[in-house]
Length: 147
Image (cartoon, rainbow, N blue to C red):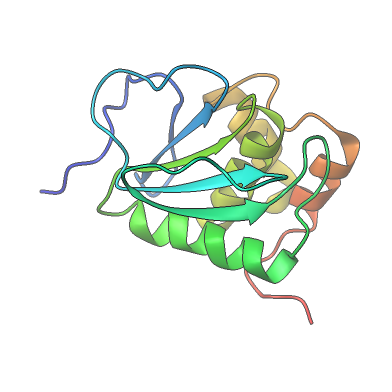
């Protein structure tokens, strides 16, 4: 058996496949308990160093990611690694960019794009995915890179 998140821990989203991904805001203290094995940080500037494997996606606050293909690759890595590892996705506040990324990961897990925002709002945070363009991004998200 692999060791992932406690399903009752704050910010943990259970995907339909059973994979668990923790979302959080970096402006809040690191939650108590086990540390992530891998994280994707969604920030407009380089994130601070951490003691676990991590990846940065250039994604300014209240905006969309700068590189769609890199974002797809990073979110795919989150989805794959969440099968056996503690994985987190985080931005400054833990709602807009994090919620958008979690909704996209839900699409990778099989939820229709049109339903992904509602799923994340129900199971992660009711204010996740903050802007109309973030909602549109999720609605158009597919597992295939754009050219």
